[in-house]
Image (cartoon, rainbow, N blue to C red; front, side, top):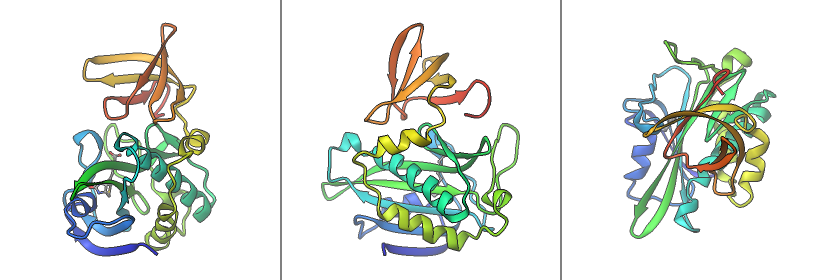
Length: 234
Ligand code: BTN
């Protein structure tokens, strides 16, 4: 069992772990509510109390730091497998690491690198809509409860923590590709320099998305761009 702390309310489980005085490999923190939940690309993650799950796990980076984002890919695979085992629902991954069921987002992952006393850690934060999915214009979200009426945040948390404890980033991409819904899709790439359309063809060993545009192969990094499906959310 991982060293796990539970909170009713916290600013952000990722922020908490980043500043933890005793940060160590596979330390976890779980909260019922976050007051300053953070999403990818500077967005916020609305985190009300009411049966959704907000948790983070620290992974010691005892490999090249450039590979640290692979822990986020490992966390995505862990989440898909935990959901499948818990309720028999098959879901997929929208690159890089949104968990999608029935064409809607069920779970978001924020993976951040932090350093403490010369040691790097990847902090993987996961937010799962168990009871309620956020509503609003432009939001395509789903809650686990819509797919599995008995879904319980506490039970699912236990299952997910168990999967996360056993993440192994070597060979993770091979597993990841089985679940990745972005491969072979027409996508819109939204980068700081503008938007363009391309076909996603593969995911490289370092987690980059390989796209083809006018016959040219381009490798794109998850930190730099946002990807949307042209014919749907993913
Ligand atoms: C995204 O899809 O943009 C990623 C969302 C990640 C949200 C989780 S909730 C637990 C952890 N703490 C945070 O502040 N963010 C992550």
